[in-house]
Image 1 (cartoon, rainbow, N blue to C red):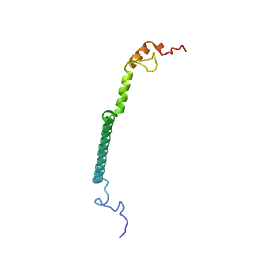
Image 2: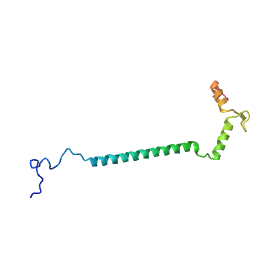
Image 3: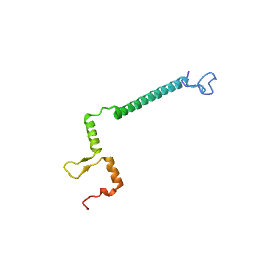
Length: 117
């Protein structure tokens, strides 16, 4: 008895490898595995973007503001939105920022120094 495989002339139609059969189980396992990976990646990306959006909303809207920041903003609004005399500089006045922009837009020569230089 020889250890060699029979050649094509020695095989019968019922023996040997048939190229018409597909490895259905192997293909099914690959497709199932790829589906699991795809679903896991989709769920992971969805969770990532949901958490990113929640963090962004928290940072922009829900994060508590420090009291010092609130006080500084109130002080800025008060200084920029009222008429007042500048302390220590007689003849110098504070004008609300909106009004100052209107005056400068109406007469740009107001930006020139008053000393004539």
